View 1 (cartoon, helix red, strand yellow):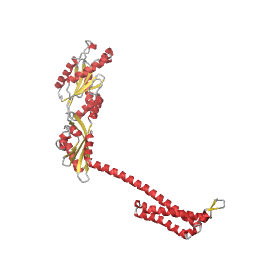
View 2 (view 1 turned 120 degrees about the horizontal axis):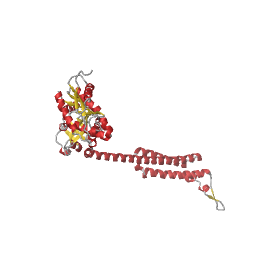
View 3 (view 1 turned 90 degrees about the horizontal axis):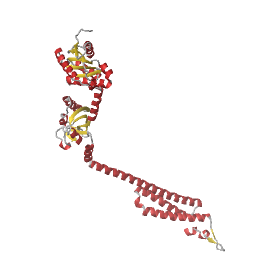
Length: 429
């Protein structure tokens, strides 16, 4: 029946001159329909037998249906020839199904490649993470060793859980392996004042949690003084256990700079004595704390004449020599200052009587007589001094004693030449 419907002689016919000519449109479509039928058949065999292993069950069912249906349609159209319109529709449907399966296969392939790539990335990450976790202790301790800050971990019973080399050296040990003791061993090495208060604050922090920061001075493994800034934090682990982690920073260079800046701000540049501001503050603090002593103002006799006759450089040498004489005559604990110009002062702590004052000032005058400045030749340096005794709980402040001593100095300068005058209370109001 198929062969009777397929009219070969009308599709490929030869005329009397040997020329080929085509048949009707129906026969052309029938021929193409038959070709599509064969294509669909081979396509179905290939998908359902050769490539069946690469599909999952649900996907395989879809492929099977879309491959077998065109075959049945093709058989029906061959057995029961219909109008050309249906033949064209059949061929178009076979083409669309082929494209659908091919596109789906390509998309499936891309998805599979993407999934495999993602799985590989996840697998590589899991391998790296597994290796990191397996070596976390080694990594952790190497990181501790690299720290220049001192790191210490302790439990709530003051047992040291870990300490790095930097911390051990800060507290006088060769390295972490040579550390012996507990957390109290570290705190007790502090050479700073207030050690008892520090231990109390640490105990309170352990009970309440939180953070604590403080400074301390210790001696390191080379017996050098170190200034440390300590930051302690109490943390709770996942198992509920609490530990304290301490970070110690060496701030010695900053403390040294701070000390130098403080010295510069408090020191007279020429004489290296206290300047007026710092000298006043230190004396005022001693008076407020009830210290007794002698407050004396000293002035160089005829200094303007020296300055005008011999110049600034010689005048500076005179001032430096006066400062050296004061350092030699008075004690380290006494407050010696340059008030400005050629005026100096001293607060000598603990001097109670005029006899003590006279002995102290005579010692100073003796140092003055030793001054020898070549540029002055035989000219000698002399000074005048005005003194007031400072009593405890008098209610007077620095400015009050300064005025009294200045009044005594005024009297002394009337007769220059290493002369001393006392202020008598009530001489002026």
